[in-house]
Amino acid sequence: MTDPGIGAVEERDPGMDQNDREGRNQQGPEDRENPEEHEVSEDRDEGSRDEAGRAVPVDRPQEPGPRPGPHHESGGEADDGSADETAPVRTPPGGSAAAPGRQAPQTPQPGPRAEAQEPEPAPELQSPGRPVRDSAGADEADGRNGRRAQPPEIPPRTTPPGEAEQAPSRWTPPGPSRPGFWRSPLRGPWLTSVLGTVLLAGLVVVIVTGLLSYAAYNPGLGPPNDRTPDRGVFGFYLFPWPTSPSWLYRLTQGLHVTVGLALIPVLLAKLWSVIPRLFTWPPVRSLNHALERVSLLLLVGGALFEFITGVLNVQLEYVFPGSFYPLHFYGAWIFLAALIVHVALRVGTIRRALGGRSLREELRTPTRRTAPETRDAPDGSGLVPTAPDPPTISRRGALGMVGLGSLVMVGVTVGQSTGGFLRHAALLAPRGQDPGPGPNGFQINKTARSRGIRAADVGQDWRLTVRGRDGREAVLSRAGLLRLTQHTARLPIACVEGWSTGDQEWAGVRLADLAALVGEGPPPGVLVESVQRTGSFRAAALRENQVRDPRSLLALRVNGADLSLDHGFPARVIVPAGPGVHNTKWVARLTFADQEDTA
Image: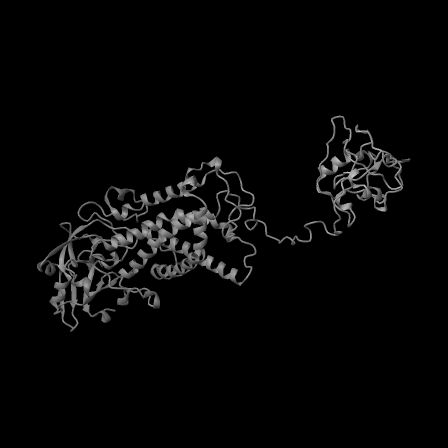
């Protein structure tokens, strides 16, 4: 009989069981009795049989909604749209089937296309418990072939797959906290680790030379040398600063400033590579995360503070409140503590990241073959972009730009320490203080005018007062000093700002000889005071090893000429390997005393 709206079907054999009448893919009783005569695929329905036992293809209706089932093999669809000749068909409930024992001809059976009979409903209209098809492509193939595969029974499901396991999305504010905001394909643990390793190596040099610079001031002598009286345990490493070699402070402070400035491009590149982490949302997830964020804040903030104050000091621009020395000193210890914690926490990650990629291969990779690092970063850093832009530069190019920037910083800085023809390229050296030509034509840090030196202070009435520990005192004019035994020493001047002069030939009276005038021998330390009325370091204390060095002079002349006013006329102190601010100019008084009394 023909079911209206479905198509012609053959009558069903009454011997087929109830499951067939309900549309299930199961065998009837006759089939179970003769399994060898009816070989069918597990995923295909068994159709009606003719008298010879041959399968007769039958049209069957399309039930509403997609049916689940694994993809199965089919003979495909012929070019003319005919159904698969080997596909078994089923008889709908109430239909008729051919008599058993007969087999249908092996020719394609034309029939109405299943998809033309009834449109397939949308997935959301499927009722709970109805299985869902794996693939739309398999469903269409079944419809064209006039059959439907039946999968094994599965438990009913009321929630579509995956919905119950999906956590509700967490709100993230717009802007840099969104994962897709940072799109550079270069970011990743490897690039960050390379920059961090270079930065760490340079910071070791900067930190060590900075601590040596602090020790060179001999803060253990107390005021006026010590600008950090509350340093406590931070002065545990202090030692008497040596006087040999004479270029020691020139080397250490030159390295401190030059390497520090050369690291600025590396620091900026490192901050760029990790900037997504600074905007992590939510800012704090747990107590451990809060501690990590605080250490990161101290690390980044400390690095920026130290570099900014250092650059301003190089340029003699003291725009920050307070004295540079305690600010830079205590800031350095905060930064150092944060750096140690950061390295301790990240050293394993850095090792794995560097071992995961070859530096040689990265340096050979052009822009067109530059790809983002893998998303499964060693530490789950979140630095790899979720939606990267196409690369506009390779990692080789990025590292080359950083290296070139550091070389430029070295080129415009190193000349102020090395001298020679590079001094003219030292654009970052202090400017605006032209020493002029001649024997006094070398770098000046502070001028007489800027320090309030008056003509009367250094004129004919100027006198030097020398006092010993027992109260003995000697007062000398410049002419009287010139009558004493004169000695010469070739020494540089090196300042905390990083600049230094070449060796200059100084001539004057040894400090040890002046101590002998007031009965001090061997001489103790000395407190040197200037006629300078304003500014820092109007006085400085020298240790006994500095006083006893034969190259330590109260200089009256330089390079065969009298000192110029800006270089300390009528007399100045010159000490080997000491900071420039301890080579006091416009000296008025020398007080020899034991170390505990020099303050």
